Length: 152
Image 1 (cartoon, rainbow, N blue to C red):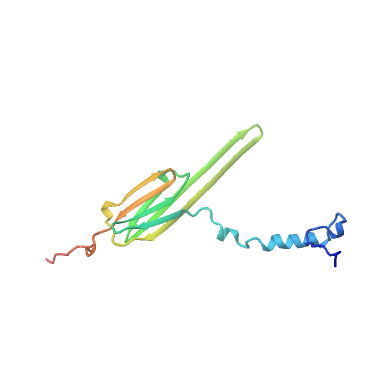
Image 2: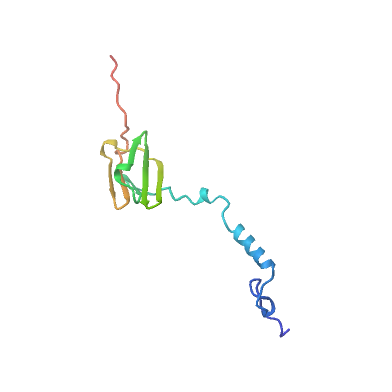
């Protein structure tokens, strides 16, 4: 029993300085099965991260949109639905002797949120340091939006 030493499959057998021919195959299977089969579906980098806070008087929406100018951000509030849409087109051109590189990239994403009982006329938005902050004041409780229709 004193000759037994702990070992794992990645260590060289009996100290001979080389591993089993199966070690490479085991490593390949481990790497393959530890990866996501559909990484593009689960690791989206083009989705904006958004925090929504609600107080008695307002909703505050903060969206992280770094590297985008405010001209490329569109906000819409319609039927109690706030939509943030971002569109950005990038173009890179580089020219050297016997070398031309031109790349184009289009980035588009949008998020929509249900926000009820909002005073549409008092909504404000500010974009600073990559953070879009939208303040949506609430209507007073009991006040329904709409209007009376006169009958002629």
